[in-house]
Image 1 (cartoon, rainbow, N blue to C red):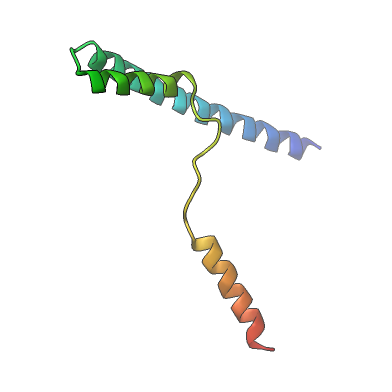
Image 2: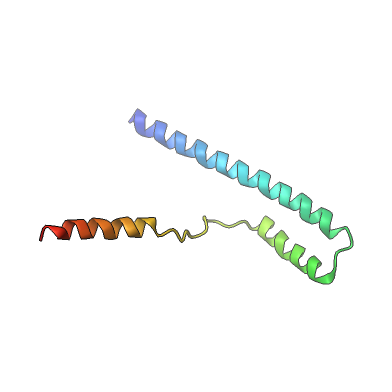
Length: 86
């Protein structure tokens, strides 16, 4: 039971660290966007900065999809190897 509690606590610590990293990154983006927006940017740039601020206020809730096909290739290789003996 203690091992499970330790694993959960470790998971919580990792999620907290990831959240803090994202918070620091968003703070840097916010600062940069604010600085650029106040420097007399063009209309298009101002609209871009508004859009970027929505990303700051409402960050993504999940990681972006990965388009890495390594797992698919490995699965195909395993299937081919298992069929060689048939």
